[in-house]
Image (tube, rainbow, N blue to C red; front, side):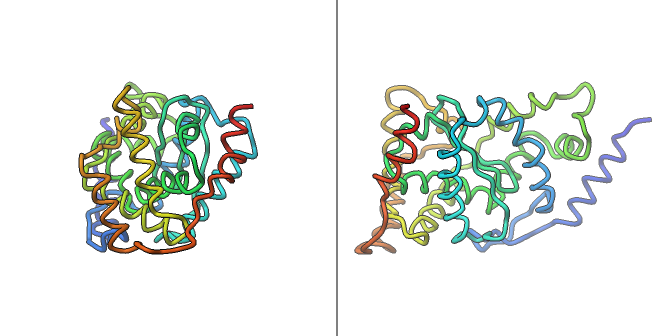
Amino acid sequence: MSKRPGLLISVLFFLFCTGCVTNPITGKDELMLFPEEQDIALGKKYAPEIEKEMGGRIPDAGIQNYVDYIGQRIVRVSHKPDLEFHFAALDDESVNALALPGGYIFITRGMLENLRSEAQLAAILGHEIVHVVARDVSNAMSNQIGIQLLLSAVTSDKTPSGVLTAADLAQQILGLRFSRKDEKEADLGGLDYLAAAGYDPYAMVETMQMLQNRNETRPIEFFSTHPSPENRIGYLTQRIQNRYFGHADLETGKENYRKAVLDRLSN
């Protein structure tokens, strides 16, 4: 007997239970295909697979604790301070950062080696935190991978026979693309989180300049899944001038970052 009718009923049940919810970043109502509990289940299931696909965690507890500390500092000023976020630095040379639903966020060795301050690290993590808060990752997964496949995978101990392995799904997750609208919201929302946490918001502009400069010589992984419109630095700079111009005593943390990350990665 075909399992499709039962799966269709499950999909319709989830749609009925979710419907429109308010995106805390934009304040607008949006259709969400998953309840938030499903986000957490998806993240928990696929986080280990993503870690494995990207070389595992950097074997340095000091770096891991530092990345988590900065991430949690941004979470506390986010729209979801009560959501349990998990941060990990992965031993992968690509220049990249990514998020899974439910608060699982990863940053690569390659990205860490190219940042120059604590504020820049906070900017990258803030950007990814917004993707989780706005539930962009869940929507991208449902649109680009398929809600039926995801629901089957997360409610079963194994991926449906004859469809995709867990590693296959992890590869699809790594290739998720966000719309320019989602990216602009993540940039601007991450910038606001950055300032709210006491960091210099210009660090968000600095990270984009670094990434764009690197991308001119060799395409980097961050832009394969994070579109880079030409006006990206422009709208970030405008937000800083409109909201944060003249703010004093905002942190950059260059020396902190050098000691906590760069020196340890070079040893």
